[in-house]
Image (cartoon, rainbow, N blue to C red; front, side, top):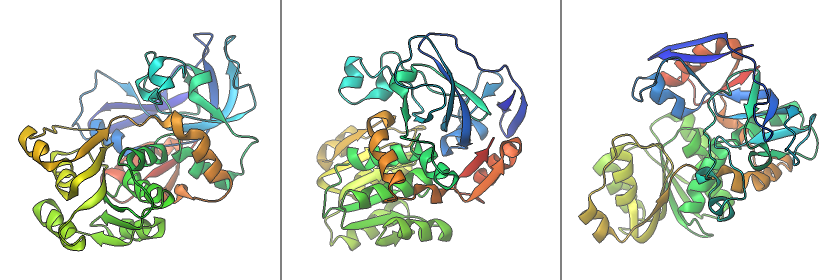
Length: 338
């Protein structure tokens, strides 16, 4: 089969790769119904994250089970499944505490931008839907594999409660779905920080009540102005830069909660400033599997439509254009059709 491979900065190719097959008895192979390009894929694409030679890409996936190993019991061929970007056995101590993305057997998925995919630890990684979904639901179900699950974790980790004032730093797919998640959790006021009109529009559609275009010191000042000098109860940091992290911490009220789900790049914290901020910090790779059953239900019953974050759809053979469009901010998120 062919699959997506990153050779170096800006050099994405769709070329021959070995067909995935069952290696361990806990594996499954799925036929992809949809996959996509993630914002985190842009770090190595831009040369800001090193790779060791040609690297298969993609970690967001949903599709139909083709084959399972002899030890797989929870899913069977023919079922439609959604899986997390991080594999998990779902029985180790970390998994039992709800942190499947820190499973002792964890692997990060990295070959999903292809027509077929091997999924290790299938029983603890994949969640099957009651029946095969209609095609129009595929984009939303795909988001549950990462960006929706990550946005939901961001809101959960930031302790979003009914009636809360929430700030979301970052207007990529994760930030936008952090807005959606905060609204589902009952936040009364959701302030989205965004400079891009199309993303502002979608943020409002997902539940944002206010838009702040300023950044850095000006952005923090604007948040304080909107909250009458208090700051937000919950702040979701969905970018991963030094500026975004500092902006998030400083936008929270004393005793407030800051989650961080953007993959950090050169982020350093000032211990003394953090000490006197009285802010709770919690984040990391989202334990998507913890939330998958609930998120799948919310999509299937029509409560949410997170698939709206996909504003460009391409055949998977044109994956290089999908990366370029996101890199140049011509697209929020690219859906790839195998």
